[in-house]
Every structure is written in C-alpha cells, then in structure tokens.
Image 1: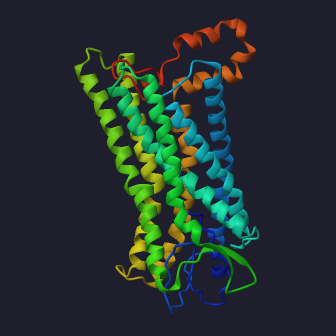
Image 2 (image 1 turned 90 degrees about the vertical axis):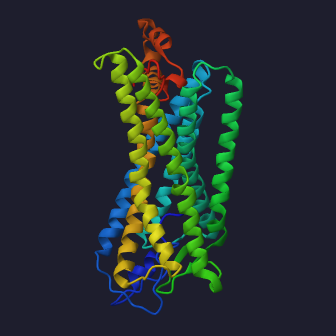
Length: 380
C-alpha cells in the first residue's frame, strides 16, 4: 500500500492524447488504447499536494502530542495497562505515516520523479505501508478490548491482561510487516518511458502482471478494510447495545448526568464507525473496481479509466485523514487524556493550587473510560 505518486510523469508528459498505462502502483491499464484526459491534471496535482501537506502538519502535531502526553502519564502517575497501550501504538503508527508524506509531496511536485534512490524507494514505502496497516489493526484491537473491558469490569487479572495486550501489539506489528512485504519486494526505480525521470514502482513478473496487481490490491482490501471494519463495527455496536441495556434497566431519568453520558458514549461509538467507513470505504471501493478490471471481470473503458485515476488518487489522500481524526476521537474527547494534557501544560506551573490533587482523585480507570463503565460512565 503506497502513496499514489507512481508514473505521474508518464501521465503528464504524454503529448496530445494521454495513455493511462501504469498510473499509480497498482492501477489498471488499457492495452493499445489511447485515452483522452477529461479532467484538469494540474488541479489534481495541486489538490494532492495541498491535502498531503495539511495531513502532514495536523497529523504530525496531533499524534506527537498524544504520544508525549501518554508517555508522560505513564511515567508520572499510576501505570495504565488497558487501551492506553493500544492508543500509544496507534499514535506511533499514525506519526510514522505522516512523517513519510513530505517525501511523497516532493515526488508529486516533480510530476512523479523519484530522486532518492531505490533503497529509499523500498524503505519509504515499507515504512508507510507497515504503519498504515498497523494503524488500522490497532483500531480493530481497541474495539475488541474496550468491549471486553466493559463486559469483564471488576474481574481480576490485570497483570494477565497487560501481558495479553503486549502480545497483541507485537502480533499487530508483525502482521502489518507481513502484509507489506509483497509490494515492497517488487518495488524498483525505473526510467520513465516519456522522459528522463526515475519513478518508484512495483515491477511484477511480466507473464502474470495483471494477476499480481489484482492479487496485491485484493490483499489490501481484505486486510485493510474487509476484515477490520466488520470487527470495529460489530464490537462497538455490542458496546452501544450494552449501554442501551444499562439505560433501560436503570432508574436514572433521561436528564440525569449518568444518562446524558450514556447518550454521549453512544454518539462517540457511532463516530468511531462512521469515520472509519468514510475514510477507508471510498478508497477500497475504487481498488475493488480496479482489481475486477485487472482480472477481466469488469469491462474497462477510457471513461472508467479516467474516473479510476482521479478517484484512486484523491480517495487515498482522503483516507489518510484518519491520521488527523484518530487523535481527536480516541484522545482529545476523553476526560482522562484532557486531564493528563492539563497536568502536562498547566499543573506543573500551579502545584500550589490544589488542582493537581483534584485531578488525581477524579481520574478514572481506562476500563471506565473505554467510552466506558456501563453502570456509571464518566464525563467525556
């Protein structure tokens, strides 16, 4: 899974009519067909550069802040062994994804030229892909962990849970690395057929090029969306159902703080599901259409080729917005995180006010926070 800067120069420098062969990494081609461009190519290029630059600035700052506050909270207060471990790993993954974006922007600004060499081509793509898969996998892990934390609230086994979470984190990174190997293995720096520029792209075996492209695309769809999204949706739906059941069995009035927090928790859970679907659904839908075209299961016309080219580039930009949304959804709206943030920036300069002691006495466990305690969810 790599950023779509591949063969931009091939697209840009074709004179008169444009041949859309080899458009980014794994986008399909129409053999022996010359397709007329039907969109403003400069607008597409500038839009991608602006979007990537925005995501880099916002995502890097937000995830660096999340990581710093979580590390500080672990060091300065009682250890947290619950979903904070996944949140810290999620922040690292999103931070690393954002850190690669200036490289892609540089390549885009040069119409797809890759001046950094083949080693950098492989390493940058590997770093991007591993952390992108890792980010998605950690979101799925958090949905399962939060549901189990609520359902098993009050049970013993904190040390065992901590050990399991560490094992899951290790497994996630290994799975992300495994998912990224096929495309990275075939990445090469090759000279463009339309000019003296070097591009970084996967060179699959010629005798089965289409099958390889479709296979890699389908693996992205399976591991990046088809498996994690149902897990995220199902376990957050179960968590929302647990809140609803608690509301119906509780004697609290609809205007009580507890009931208001239950409603807020359900809205946050809905946001988790909707944001993931909105960020990743369009991109993987485009990949699926292109994979079907590669396998000959869908007729590929010049009109569809034009649409796929634009859709796959723009939706991949939009999918990376999850690097900006994750810190907000999983950290900034959480009361514990806001407390830790205030302690880091304010309370260190006002230790005599007594506010720091107030924070320590009102700070809740992560099991309660997970959007969280069914019996008495905290203020978010």
